[in-house]
Image 1 (cartoon, rainbow, N blue to C red):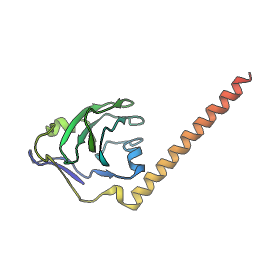
Image 2: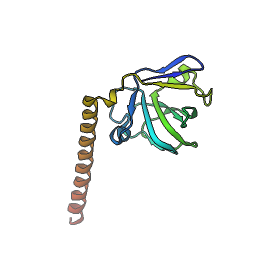
Image 3: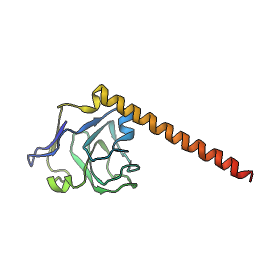
Image 4: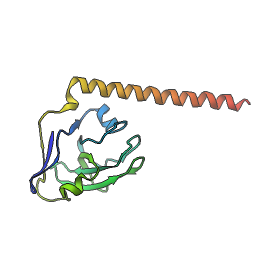
Length: 160
């Protein structure tokens, strides 16, 4: 999907991936090696807190209301940090770091300032979806294994 600023006639992101299912929303950019644009769609407007665990590079984030108007911007969102926006959003767009500055994107520029065109959505293709599921399962097993290992070590050290 392409994300365009209609007022300034600029392309904000090309080939953004749509994250609409629970797996893609849970992982986002976690464990990815290179920045890419992601669009998160939620059922209703709400305060959506974000974290940057296991994302090893900074990003820019746009928060949009139900009318696709930018209500909040977070630039240079650093790895291993949290962010809770002050405004409710229905759409979140994660972008490579510096995109907001480069495209001169601002809060509430026009009505609506952004157009999300429905080009190809790579996240909805079966192969990408299967890879996301595999990545989720692999990480879930790794977390469970780490937790169990810590529990066993704790029990063992308790008896020493």
